[in-house]
Amino acid sequence: MSSSHPTTDRSAELMERASRVTPGGVNSPVRAFHAVGGTPRFIHEASGPWLTDVDGNRYVDLIASWGPMILGHAHPDVLAAVHEAAARGTSFGTPSENEVALAAEIVARVDPVEQVRLVSSGTEATMSAVRLARGFTGRSKVVKFAGCYHGHVDALLAHAGSGVATFALPDSAGVPASAAGETIVLPYNDVDALEAAFEKHGAEIACLITEASPGNMGVVPPAPGFTEAMRRVTAAHGALLISDEVMTGFRCSRAGWYGLEGPYEGGAPDLFTFGKVMGGGFPAAAFGGRADVMSRLAPLGPVYQAGTLSGNPVATAAGLATLQGCTDEVYARLDSVAHTIADAATSALDDQGVPHVLQWAGSMFSIFFVAEGTRPAQTGVVRDYDDARAQHLPAYSAFFHSMLDAGVHLPPSAFESWFVGASHDDDAVGVVLAALPAAARAASESRARMGR
Image (cartoon, rainbow, N blue to C red; front, side, top):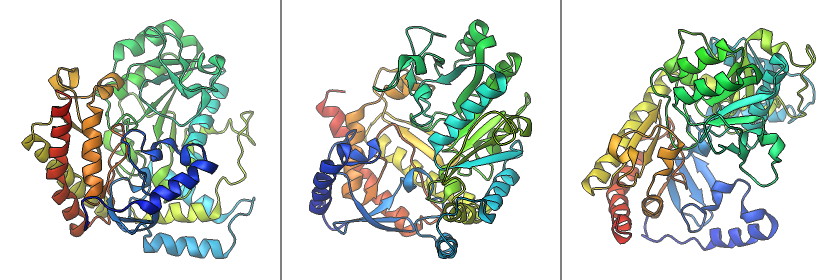
């Protein structure tokens, strides 16, 4: 960018206006920049790997709309599919051909998924999957892991109680204790805690839900054997295993995280949830899995779930075009770009003596600015939410704003994944690489100012 301090007057004005009519000025909390400070950039347009804000500043996008823009913004094939679908009508409230085609594409890509139901958001997908698991098993309790985010479902917005295998406490105002009280929250990657919870409550547990490879506390992949342990324990106690692939689905590989880690010796998860990439930037999501479980949904079975905009013809057209565009060549490009950027970032941070940990889930990655003396700083691995929280947040904020001033838009939180797209060409990557040394210095200076 032409200035080390780009003009943000128009974004600031819009934020002030937005704050008068929208709580916090945003429609999803992380957009408010509260974790990093400063003025959120209001984006006016996007193309390929580039974002342009309302002040005319241009940025390389390493958020990719939190994952969906795997092909890049305004991809011509996706736009063509959207224009063609919209010209025929934007919503019917009836079955349509596009929803059948998208469901078939998902089933073809993920072997254990025999049937899917389309919905409009990842939150709706996880909420429905948990309801289905409860209806199928006749049980009420749910197990989840601290640091795994499954949307803003009451029962899943919960944090751990005072000990292992105790019931959860609400993680948000407005969530009744009774809603969280049927949820057991465990530390991630802890087989002993998993076995203890099921030993105590197994006959009452309907399901265990987990991010296939967590990305909402930063990328924290399952330790070797942990997914197998989840499958073994749930099967032994008659509970369903729900793999939340809203973030990893169709991004980590053609078949998401399952395509990288599966098939499993103990068998596949019973249900999966999907979102983001499968919508191509539109509100679309899905849950699916074994046909005998899915058959319990209305109209075939007693578990009710419905949605006026589920299977929307425009959203399904965008999703289908996106999945059809996710070829082997696209996944190879994602891996190449992600490793080029991540390797350069870690090299720049090493040069400045900034402690950090780099972790991967396919082409998704996170750089944790770990605090000295913590377990991840000593082991070089972030294993769970407690490890993820052992970060030097001011250092990330300094790094983030240096990159933003240099024309690179990172996630405005240290607890998020970095995403690239197939459209990130050499010019875009070059802007990122050029920005990294100064950002690493800014992070180092931030740590020095705080004496850490």
